[in-house]
Length: 505
Image (cartoon, rainbow, N blue to C red):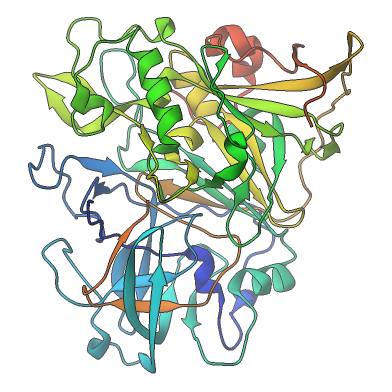
């Protein structure tokens, strides 16, 4: 069993505070506030750490190769101590390293902060594999995102309103946020598509920024609010469903988790996926196990020849319009999402790739829709209606050879096809606060636990009705997922907003 140290920080966990936040400083006439973040790397195996300040281009034989996550930059304490905060929708605690360790380049010094308060309480968190333990404490956290200056992360026995609740109450923004993660991609000539290699996407508070995606937002219900748990109905490879015995996928808990780089599936499903892909691509066993990279020379990988992998979810609605009962939709991910470009490893100038699907452990029946899947979409976390939405990312559609897609499925009865008319709703007339993300590990949860815990490295964590057939609905508004972006969306590219991503951005 690999021991995984993970620096975990929950943005929404900032939000348990005592006292008022200075929202009067907000310029409410400005609807979108952007904050530049930093691209850093985390180690694939030993990654309970702040991201390293310098990017490594080598493979560490002990720790594997650097992995990409998504983070924001924060300061903690007075004077402020800087950290890279992993934004993770699959965690609920604000935890920070507070003692030296070989895998941690910097840590929180409580004695150097004049605003530090010790709560004299120990906290232990148990995961599917591994635990961590730390001391409960309080200090000032600064997140420079326009609406937020400095707030105290206070954890007394008296419940207080979360940061996000105060933000909603005092600014009138909607109780919703979204993530658009930009995975590493190559443009023509094997160069990075972004001028600034640190740029890794956007995070939006209070509404939806429609310049970031194409088409509609397809929502699936959150079945448990503790985390963003959704119901997965099926997984298909190249149009062929992978069936499971004994209650199928229902016995697995499925999370939408920005803190996990890979897509995690049941072991039997993993073996079927690998067996299917081995017909198309020759790679050593260690590649499929996630322990080696492949670096094809010449023209590289023929992406259009590789199969699409689809994840089927219940459809709650599209752009606010309720769907018929038992409607479904498929998230069709591109081969460039499950065979992911390594940003840090090259071989004689040729790009290298990692396999971004891994099996869950037998004692942890979970399915994780991690960054590898999320990077194809804008993912909307609608806390008002308890649902998670997906829309095809403009960045992914424009920069990937094979675009990700979304296919809507409707129930067919007596040979007829029920198709619901869908119209795009106007953009929410609320204040929208956007945060520019850097490609690094980050996390957020549906419910914030109000815990700032200092970890002293004596702990570890490894985070790791069907009576009738269904038929795909194809229309100009619901194109098949497998086409190239130019074929799929045509002239839509001409309507890109000035602040939308382009090949040169």
